[in-house]
Image (cartoon, rainbow, N blue to C red; front, side, top):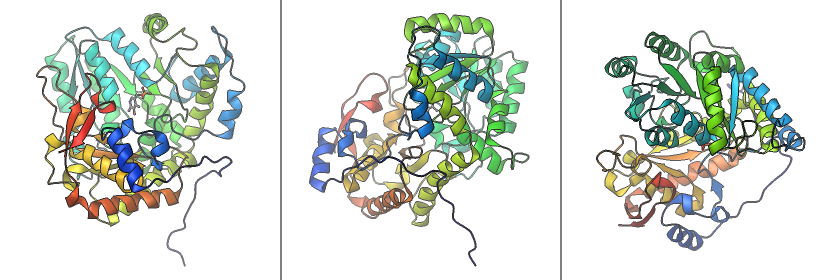
Length: 458
Ligand SMILES: *Cc1c(COP(=O)(O)O)cnc(C)c1O
């Protein structure tokens, strides 16, 4: 008798896209041309692309069909109203402001609410979110629990806010905290969830201080899956219900439709406050577009509207997180160091433990990402000292405790066999890790340097 029955993806494949295997010589040439930065590789030189799960999802037949119904009217597009209805019904916010992608929404809300000298606390930073807060004049303060910075901690909700830290920030900066920035799940901590109990406590605390909570809802379906699995009282509750309950504890959200909502482009800002919405719509016409398209075409908004519904189906999210977990458990079985518990959207290799002989000043995670590509054409990305950038006050490199390589799994794109090949690549590189050298940066862009920086081996 089988102990445990297998299950498979809740879809079958209707259309395929070829990928190309390259030779070791071709990969070395491509890596050198890319300045040892996986963001600068051409996708034709990549075999399995785990750079990001952003905009790389496979759309469903229903999404493609909906795109044909796109209403490309400049003003008052029917497609906008369909997307608006899906956002209101699924996330519960009253007002929906479309943006070209998540950072468009972050830009608008930061400009709207932040005054120079303000302080924005959050459960670990996200690159674009924090940059928009800083550009608007705020200082970001990390109030995530300490366990989030420890790749070996098995805390089930490493995305939780440290309530004492948050309270201290609120007490020390009266009138200077425009909102608390809460992400579900926390991308930079390895896709780790925040619990409903913690979110409820954040709501109570901020209400007492009269401070708003703005949710980064980009990965909230994945967060809801972990709540369903781990939090008392949520077992068997539908993902859609959990998502709605969490959104109801906040005043608004920013969303990248390139993640959870299964679209290739798009995003939105959602708010409950009518006056704030009008101000946001006014900024929108400057930076994004009219308030009924905000940088998206009608067909994009159709794809998002359908994608939102699909993203909240229990079978979908179980398969999505299940595939990530399958890959991670395989690697763990071979002793490969990675962030635990395994998160919602990818595997985060612990580059400090993987390459203890490479000092953090020589970008171990960047070097490891390059090594994975050179081994078999798998593309990953750095989440460590390069991504953390420089401190705006001191100008020095931020030295994060987490020095990670992210293998991000696009939704509905790769099969279990691709996951096997990926795990075996990590093992081959792990076995040859002593040969891997650090890197030195030869070009450093001013903002979000990880996207365009160039390196060479030391
Ligand atoms: C991707 C992402 C964003 C930014 O969204 P874009 O669509 O890439 O601009 C914000 N927050 C989180 C958690 C993300 O993963």
